[in-house]
Length: 481
Image 1 (cartoon, rainbow, N blue to C red):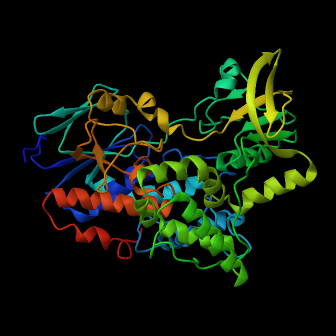
Image 2 (cartoon, rainbow, N blue to C red):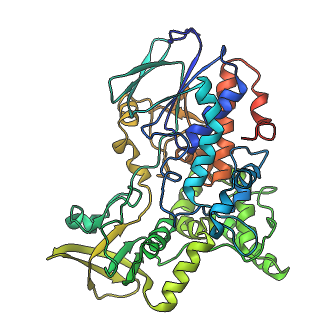
């Protein structure tokens, strides 16, 4: 294989330095010596490992799973939890510890943990961080050429696409207020809520994890006004159980072949768990661990049906809010300063300094109009628009090298994480890491699943290098940092 780097070594360029990109870089650096492989991560943020999820400096934003289930190393799930204790993070944030002993630290703390694991490799030069935005990826004679916003060009043997989640799309009904001063289009932006007054009447569009985070952040900032959350089904993200349960059930031994059959099995298993003193939480945990087998057993038509009909119910049970955030929501509900309804947006307009939003409650015909000081858009990442929002991906798609998956979840890949071209052919040296590959893997949003996938992508690169990548799978307990 010809190599397009001055050093003469194969070169892996990872586009995106959030958790997925950082984890791929770490596992590659651990498995391959400095004479074997050059590793570059292109990420505009000042540090690697944060991304959208773990860069927030907001104290109210917490990880939404216990620290004992968050780790960069799939064979060492307690790695992060031990790091927290060793670095005194729990002494600095006593509120992170919940009543059952689980820790839910602030999200930026997890970002610092990932950064710490990569630090030795960055200092030694084993991993290079190019602080820029990748703007174009082109096929070259023996690999790829990656261009950045500052005019840089990198020659690569392999490219790993680990780009961040796209920003939420603004619902069409809110387009007339999209540029109003009181409209928060992207809740992930730094200080997105800084200009919302303490007594402001606030509408939050969406009722998932980000919506809950917005309520918690407003509360932390001293907000005491009314907050209304609107979503089509009116379903809020659920919380964690008061005590720990082991995963319950088995969905992998004889996986369901249709979405309806899967739903029936889940309901039956929840009843069985409840009958034995357990909880639905333990059933959902088993569904997560069996996710790849479940997804693989479904036909494309059944996968589409699952996403279209059941995804909203899966999301609110699967993506649970941290108990500290749940406590804020419950308090605001009891005090009458927070409400959550099922409704569809109809239209919006500016009315002086206020934003008038019209909506129709689910099951009702009449249209209601309420006026708000601020409207926050938490509709979730617009994965269908990823090609429009990311110039590097858009260029690849324009040249037929990349395409969206049919389910609207991200980019189409095969089971080995290779991108699929417009003519349906896997692109051997172009890989996709992280949630944008979930069209092929099903459950690929949670940290444990993303960590496993990052290791798998690193192993695929090792296989293509013609080397034994077994060392990747053993990484973890010997590398505490």
